[in-house]
Amino acid sequence: MSRPLARHEGSCHCGAVRFAITTDFPELTTCDCSICRRKNALMVKVHESAFELLAGAENLQEYRFHTRTARHFFCRTCGIYPFHRKRVTPDFVGVNVFCLDDFEPEGIPVRATVGKGMA
Image 1 (cartoon, helix red, strand yellow):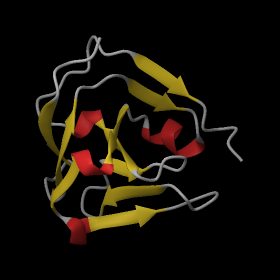
Image 2 (cartoon, helix red, strand yellow):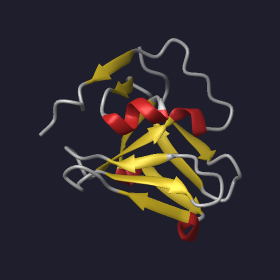
Image 3 (cartoon, helix red, strand yellow):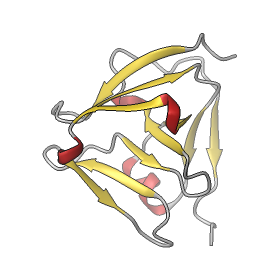
Image 4 (tube, one colour):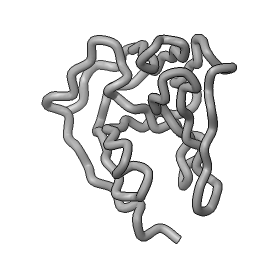
């Protein structure tokens, strides 16, 4: 069961990168690709129109691998991964919910996605 549609703000660990999303958290996802396994993030998918970068664009470092389609963003200062542009749906942003301020993911369904076998 999703939550009410609401705006949530978040940041990297040092606070240099700040962002906001609007979502009702219909589900959270994990992924088994090589980078997602290593960063162990729990993500929510939001359309780009529901995502706003509030501060720190100059502090973001982009990383692409494999097909170079998905765009993973990290803070240059603290190294935290707050979000990425999705590979299959590039008009969506995958947001690391552990970077959201005062957010607890309990009770939201978690779906495991298969990224490891994507060609």
